[in-house]
Image (cartoon, rainbow, N blue to C red; front, side, top):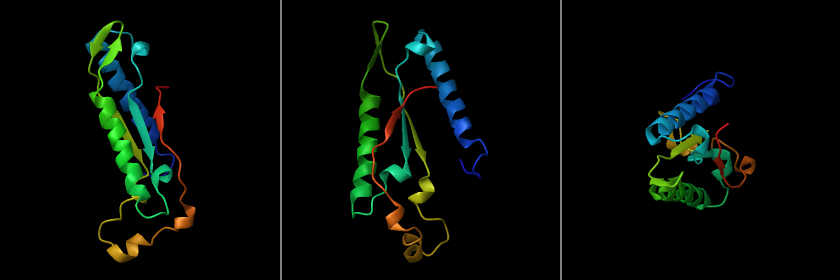
Length: 126
């Protein structure tokens, strides 16, 4: 999704995730609140690093964790089941260059001193 700040992108994502959990609840036959959190949210500002190769490592680690969680069965109310995982990537424009731009100049569009490192969060439904 793309849009100006305040246009409802985050609210739309929350609605999509809520709808997915409603469907999982019906299919599994368990209460909505009994389902474990299966949503990963990644913000590019939490991944980008000014050190060579660190951003790639952070992204690879994120996707490894998502894949690992997707493979793990979940036990809900005594039953083992396979549930989907939702991966939300925010601010992806901070990582990828825009189409049609000169690739050399696009690399230097942002100031590496503005980047910082931290972990991503496993999100819970709200």
